[in-house]
Image 1 (tube, rainbow, N blue to C red):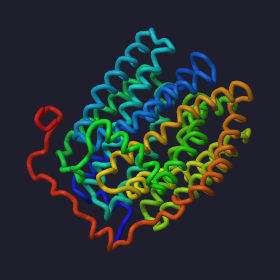
Image 2: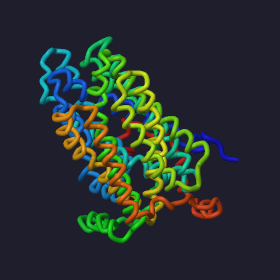
Image 3: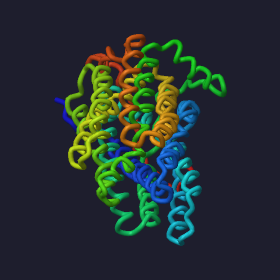
Image 4: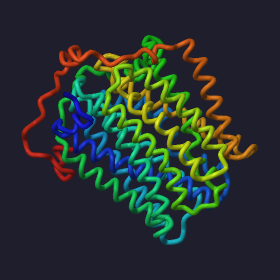
Amino acid sequence: MTTTFDALKVRHFPLIFASGWTWSLSRWGVAFLGPFIANDLTGSARMVQLAGVALWSPLLLGGVVGGWVSDRFDRRRIVIGQFFVTIPGLAILGWVEISGRLQLWMIYPVLFVTGVGWVFDMVGRRVIIYDVVGPEKIDNALALESSGTAIALAFGALAGGSLIQAAGVGWALVVMGALQIISLTTFSMVPSITQRNQSAAAGVSALIEGVKMLRTEKSLLSILGVTAFVNFFFFSSSPLLQVVGGKFGVGPALLGLLAAMLGIGMFVGSLGVARYKPRRRGLIYVVGSYVAFTFMVGFALLPWYLPSAMFLAFAAVGMGFFGSTQAILVMDAVSEERRGRALGLLSSAIGVLPLGMLVVGEIAEVVGASAAVAISVLSGAVLMTLFLRVRPESIYQRQQSEEAVTSLDRRPELPESRTPTIFDLKAF
């Protein structure tokens, strides 16, 4: 009998899960801090959205490259290596702010570097999870990971707002860097694991092949299309949560709590998928998107703090359904040796997000943040409906039968040797 936490019983997955959770906690904290600094220094919706653009833009083109790198090189080294760029960036920015020399332009390169790190972490870590748990438990594992990411979003936003109010922006940034050190230390305890795919193509031809999958894999195109619409029209509004919340006249801590509603709702939705493992993954994926679009309108337009926060939480439950089924739908849509590139394409579909942020930011400059959010999500719901009439394949994607999954479950043997550390250069 399966349970909600089956994947946590698989050797090494708890370490990967803990590392991913602390990384996500840091990333979502940074995602709150960047727009907060921009809003505090300028009061401009445009500059707030540009902070989101800096953080998310690496996904646009970096996802394809990241997917190829994941298929071609040692994924463990990729995940570990990105920490040696993101951690110093956060530490330096925190020190600059504490010393009283922070300027607006300084936050954008640090946010960009953090976004680059996330590309390689997301693509590498998720395929490693597949290698560790196998197809039999991958639904449960990715749903648990999505749940962890959601609760990290909630805690990250809440911690960001609370730390700003208690200790200041600089120390909040230092704490986010410290969380990444914990993530690095935890992940380094996971030994190298033989990759399932040993025949990845090399060089530019592999990158081209990844893009060509959009023409040959109709189900993949449908799944990625939904991802692109949700990110362009829904998630593009996330930096404006603080601006919309400004109409309630609350401080940084309550603004952080408002932003945390997004993570709390996603956690509930993701945990539901982890517990019940619905067979009709694609339907849950698409319905969750529509739930998010619908309730986001209420969040944007309601004039009271508590009802607005509740509508945001309901919208996020839909995002929990969406996010916890997204990666497994993508990986199951292609052959085993192309999963890294498929996840790279997923990153690129998510990467339309900064383009949406630019659009929503400009609309907000004209009609205000609340109206801009409402216009964006309503437009997304309508356009996604038109797209699904042409490419409906994602709606009909189902979980494989238990027998088929069991027959495919050929996980590599994990080494019994000593656990490597970050100081073991050969292991790295």
